[in-house]
Length: 107
Image (tube, rainbow, N blue to C red):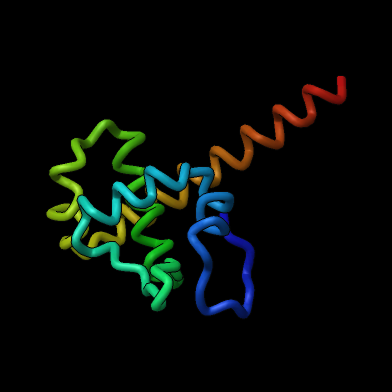
């Protein structure tokens, strides 16, 4: 989960590290999902907004549910608060799992 910050945009590397998604995967998703359009500068450096990151969180959830990539754009068109709750619940569970694994290493 991304910590609260005053940043407006994140680099592709920052997003990759925050969401644990490889750079090539992020680039692939940009090509396949019409709603994911991070800003770019003249040097083609990508800058992701909070909205882009929320879309990526949904894509990660779709992938975890084995939803085909070709369906992602259509599913994103739905303004689905229940989906956002599922995405948040999955992230919370992953955070708890990581904490438990860290505790187990201490034993």
